[in-house]
Length: 89
Image 1: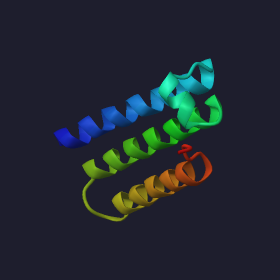
Image 2: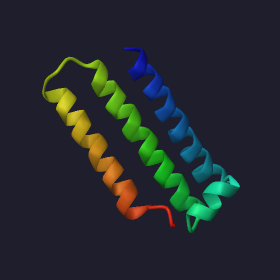
Image 3: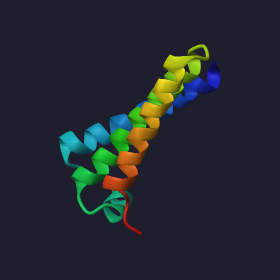
Image 4: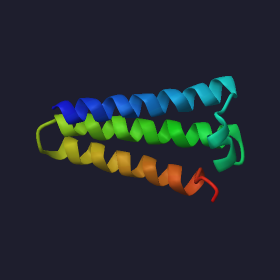
């Protein structure tokens, strides 16, 4: 249970960073270099953070259809983040 809670906190931190970038428009320098706009960086981090939180909630559930559904939803969110808001090299 502890790894799921720790992972959920990491997801929450990522989502909070993404929301702060989207709402405030201020982006750390390292992230500014990796993304074309602050909006892209904010969306990427928000989607990744929400996906990690969903995955960790699913890890706390007993095995079954709901756990699988949450894992698939998390995978879809990560795919959207990587395809649409991928960091530049």
